[in-house]
Every structure is written in C-alpha cells, then in structure tokens.
Image (tube, rainbow, N blue to C red; front, side):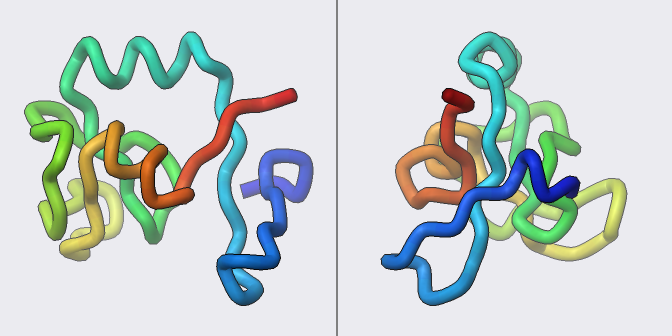
Length: 80
C-alpha cells in the first residue's frame, strides 16, 4: 500500500485506512468481493457483504471481510 492511499484516523489508534474510488467500491459490492485486512485490497470473490474471517487466496490468512463491512468498520474510505 502506498502512502498516498493510506489515511490516518485518530480513532483507529495508529492503524491506517485505505482510500479507494467510489466506483471501485460499487464494483466490489455488486460482485460480492471481499476485502483482505492484511493485503489491504479486494482479493476474493463470492463474499457476503457482512462476512468476517473468510480466507484470502493471496496471503492465505482468515482476514477477509465483506465490502460493506470494510467500509462500515473503517478499513476502507473513499478518496477525496
């Protein structure tokens, strides 16, 4: 993740959110994509919107959450 895509949020205690375009988010929700909290990107298909702990095909960890949950929990935010 490049620094240009990371945003600090004082309520997240030093963690960073990844900024994405709204069109990328819309595509991910329409196609049931899952967000990997470790890889900081959409890595998985067939992921329910409220999924938690699904496996990531990229890093092989149980760190994938649904796109909607990624936005609601502050894992992702929209650019500018």
